[in-house]
Length: 344
Ligand SMILES: [Zn+2]
Image (cartoon, rainbow, N blue to C red; front, top):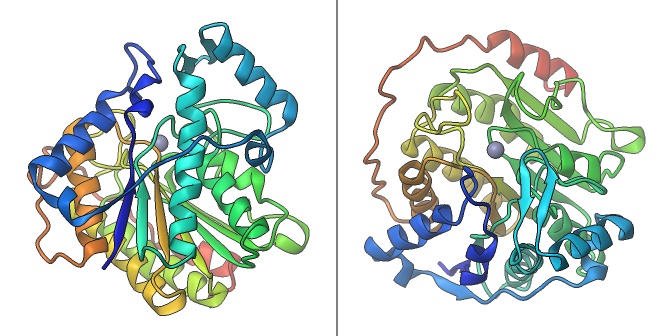
């Protein structure tokens, strides 16, 4: 199994200061991959900067120029959550370029799957707005690139970050070639992602929002994967699966209130891999979004790689939630989603 990863110290140059989305996140991941030795089983992919033309697949030219200008004057705040430092513009270009390179290597068959360990993250970035720690929408740009450059016709973007990927949804809201499925805590930042947001025009039904109540854990995610996500993905039958992989739904994460474990991430990855193996020759590209508890993030990314590599043993040092809340009942949500997406 050829599994690649994108990483470069340039991603550490996006200096956000005292902020949950900081360089230590990637340092923790890489050091855990090294310490456990799994990095030797992975194939490094060297990132490159994205071109302005590539950024413009999703973002307005004026917005790109604005980001470039803020970068050139040494940084600043783009929105109340999203800051740029002198190194941020280059890091953001390499985050997009690295994700594109990972996708390209998988599309061309050089790799079976890949994970772009990049920052800044991307899924909140809209065509004309930075928000929620995101500057350019790495995964959305990689998807548009695969559609235009490689002439793919059907791509799945699965976004399991605990926040709704409003930017990604916006980029494809009227595009039937991209099935966008998001599981997220709801209501929560950024406010979008209600189950009735299903796409517009000919793309109606290709945006699947699964708004989960706070407290959802491994069992609830398993339930939505089995009953909603798997049948919808099989019906759509993508040629490539892109994953907006955020790990902030881990119980130990400080930015949200879900109860997923590292073992739960491995289970989800297994289900995604089974879909990829059945539908698209195993072609999967993961891109890092959120995840702010360093131990939870590092062990869960490692568990993701273990599943991609076909390693059997999953290490879950954090184990089950310290204080387990009553699991919310999501039967009515599942029923509603089945109606909306005609799974009955
Ligand atoms: Zn998130």
